[in-house]
Image 1 (tube, rainbow, N blue to C red):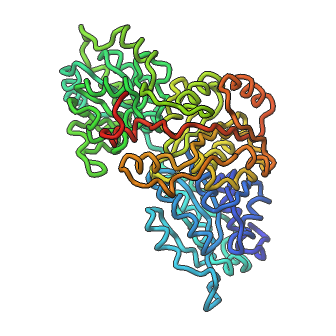
Image 2 (image 1 turned 90 degrees about the horizontal axis):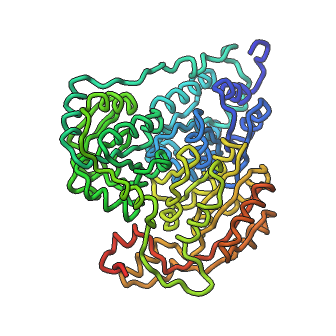
Image 3 (image 1 turned 90 degrees about the vertical axis):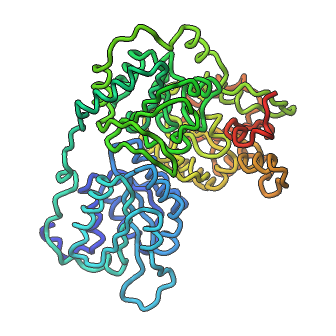
Amino acid sequence: MTNEAKLPVYDVLAKAFIQEGVRTCFTLMGDANMNWAARLGQQGCRMVYVRHEHCAVAAAMAYARKTPEVGVATVTCGPGVTQLITALPAAVRAHLPLVVFAGESPLKMGWYNQGIEQAPLITATGAAYHALHLPERMPVAIRDAFLQARRERRPVVIGVPFDLQERPWVGPEKLPTPSSQLLPRLSPIPPHPDDVAKAAQLVASAERVVVFAGLGAVEAKAGPACRALAAKTGGLLTTTLPARGLFHDDLYCIGISGSFSTEVGLEYLAQADLVIAVGGSLAYHAGGGGQLWRKAQMLHIDVDPVAVNQGQEVARHHLRADARLGMEALTAALPARTTTWRTEAMAARIRDSKPDSHVFEIEPGFLDPRDVVEGLEKTLPADWEVVNSSGHCSWFFAQMPSRPQEKFLTIREFGAIGNGISFAMGVAAARPDRPVVLFDGDGSLIMHVQELETIKRHKMNILIIVMNDGAYGSEVHKLRAEGLPEDGSVFGYCDFAAIAGGFGVDGKSVTRLEDLPKMVEEFGKRGGAAVWDFHVSDKVVSPTIRRAHPANYGKK
């Protein structure tokens, strides 16, 4: 930065972000961040200008999941920061590295309309907050924020008063060494031979083995090792919801384990006598408490194996290791088997069975959401990116077994709806070379429907599939099960095709599933943004809700 002593501080801070390799920033400008954001864009960073601060962070979350980069977003002070409080806990629980540049109110003023104590709000979400009040040290603090985000795999919010950003730079001429040059180069952790031998004895004594992979297995590229162990033991394969699709082409994969399990998957999980969990946290919704495999012991293979998680005992047997190295060592230590759980009939049943066979009476003029998903599964190209949002509809959309994991994204760790459109924008920014399909519900999409304008303005290639049941699906079915009034959960079928048209986006109301092949073909040729509105029956209840209320939803 020689001969740049008179640059404003925000110029130097923008350079510090560029030096960290930041190529994309999701942005909503205000007084306390707009000068910095403008300079960041001038220095070569792609700026995605969203319409709501929450959407900036949510989009950065998906971008961080889909790339090796730290997700970056920026908001102004005060109300800009308060809008982040729903997104940040999800990013914390999903272990996503983010850096958020947030303005702070000016220090020189005794009172400021948008002034607020920002640090307690941010730290309450589990994210880190650093107030940068010494300009000369700000570049180092930015570098350290990137280091912390990567090392701890969580969001770091930095607050910079905007009067300090406007001061002339009087600090060091050179920027600090970037975090990429300081990060430790960590090798995968191999297992201890004694632990491998002990785990091998456990596996050898089991008759019905299920290998259960999470995102840690995906990141460690342990998919082939998981398949090899399952084949050697004659066992089955399953995944968590975020890792869905890791074994999409394996005859003995029973799909997702947990709240989104299929009927056949639940049946086979209940028969298992050993579940080998690989690279997963064993969260409650993934069946980590053993509620889906009550006959089975649990072996947890992870760099940080756990015995208790989310208030439940989850595993009594452990192998501390990188997912791939641990599975490879365990497979090599196992003796050959003379019997197998696998049969050709089992493979055929897994392949041919419906995820949910419950019979519902569908009113004329409405679609069964299961039929919608089956139609989309058959027609959407396998190389398109897919994003599954939250809410009642997400169970149905998760049942697309041919989709590979690397083309799938879901982030549900905080249980909040309304994030889908932001996640789709983050994936579109990370994968601009292929179409992105968002699967969302009407209640979720309408929360941030304003981002249709962002998608159109940035020329993002996003197809939004709306499962429109005219209600908050989870709530209406739970209220009905409890015999309570459903007021406040039912809103009627709004016209998303017309809403899309108001934003200048192509919109269609889909009433005939046989039209899907032609529609998909035309969208593939045209690209751009589109919203397809499927009016589905609100009488179809997901298995997740039915299992939670068995007395009300018996099988017909």
